[in-house]
Image (cartoon, rainbow, N blue to C red):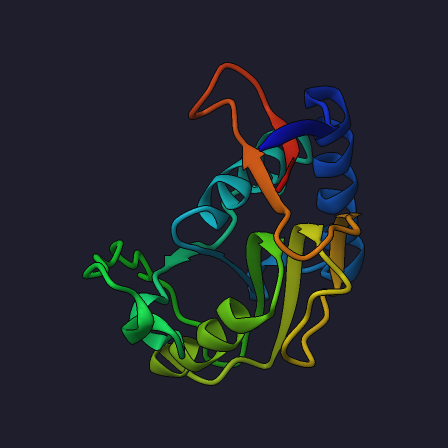
Length: 179
């Protein structure tokens, strides 16, 4: 399997700042906004955006949560191995607030459908938006589209888009791994 870099650390920094600015444009009053990162990989993007919004854009404390959707997926019983769930850290109220679901890569849309179902347990939000770092736009199984997009990638069936965060490795990068 060959690997090619799609986004460098510098490009990811630019994209993160653009996404933060788009959120501020859309939601001038961040007191009524809850950012929700999807476990396991969306939480890295969530953490980076929250840090940017609080420190670089001086928004004060940004309300956020981390949501596990493992048992809300429509395919969780199809795996040979037993899945283990991550912990949800949703000590937030979403009732009547704007919710922004955050994930690293939007592929088929099934994770987002599971997130929408899972959010029902935490109240009824005013509205829900979707923010993704990478949109694999021609691979959707469900009619789900992002509201905030870092970059769009056209990948062939079988190719894998992998996001690497400096929290886990030595630098930020997005790779496409060809079959």
